[in-house]
Image (cartoon, rainbow over all chains, first blue to last red; front, side, top):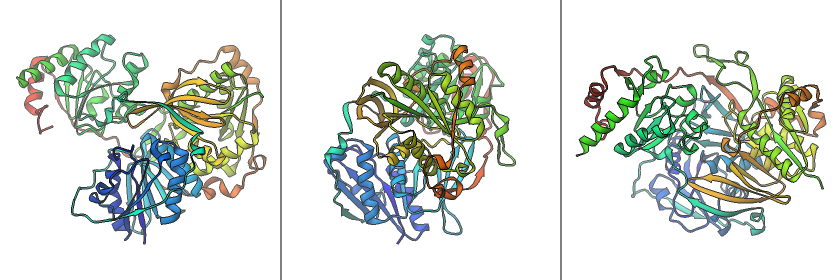
Length: 325
Length: 265
């Protein structure tokens, strides 16, 4: 039986939403491979795994150990390795979050198996081979990858696939697993401090309003902030603004910053270099405001306004605030 | 005992200049000049800072064709004390697993290392897998996506890294490996004098036989993954509705087309 196994990343309180996206895609793959869909839940606390079954997992492999309370890769790699050796999955999908991308290579290395990074497409071809599609060269090419070894492992980009539909009538089996981990190993990496909320989580915003080089002074970012707040969105920035220290790097949209896919993206005074486009071109609706009609950003937008952002952005804010009243 | 820091560095094409043939589905690698992977320069800078504070030596290691020597010379100009190039046809076509295998054995051959520094990813491969893979192979811990080094110690390092909305401060016992983001520092520019000196410096070149690795674990034949095909997708262009009226009129027209607060967006 081919088992497609999804790694259910969690922080002991919540399961990371990328897990539900992987279960959606995993279901498709398991069906094409005539196999089962499993989820591996490793954690420091006994969270309910019901949600994984509601999202389509046939089996949940459930292992809890206090050492797994902290995101320490060496420990998680050991635990995951034990699960893999026990249940022998054919495909392992891990979210391409910071933790997933840091954990997966350790597991692949010790299993002597192939790992494909940051996939944006997964499929099974006519020969029944698992195909992993991923961007490379800063997003300019798509490579189709096959793995010759088993299990076949991939990390998968967050927000690339839709979440699996939730159905409370789904049934599945929870398989409890004993993970053997010693505390001594965890002494090698220790967490001294954790601070929540410092991260803006721009990736999760429904609406992003971004300022670019068209802004003349750092204070003028206020115009962007006003529009963002009128829309209930978050503020993004192009790389030059961040490099000049006008705003924190958490706001940077682009290949070397954050990749966003909001419902609405408004680019103000952003020329649209490929660096920036790589981070926002998949947004549902894109509006560009720029004084230069030949700016590349217009070719990637649904709506464009050619003109001075210093007039247009406040006007737009004003109109929206009026609508609200 | 003196400390030894190892920096993993790759030569990559300048991504702003590389040309993609959308019709043929090819990358024209000769279209762009080569440069050190930008993230690796942050890794190098961090290693040099460690040396300046704690003492020791910095060794840069690269796997690549002969011309990658220039990237290692660049590393010397920026503060590395030695450079090793892994070169030979056996290495060509290695995926991240085989690359980790080659670099891990090279690091073992250099020996007595305390801390290994790598960039969070390369701009051509985009995987970020080699750093953690090397750490696993060497049996040492790692911390990825380091955004700041808080404390440099002889026995341990303290760093900041972000995971899922939480900023962690972590300490790691040495030997260990870190991968760094662009936030970690601002790489210094080499002086003219250092550049000239580095140009004349010797780079050590090692082949498979020098790093006691099984050649069957390297290159295309040793790689567990295969590129089945490459596609160069055309840019995702859209056809915008463009307004060029006076600001008030343009905004009104835009808002008539779409309801920014509502469902139509």
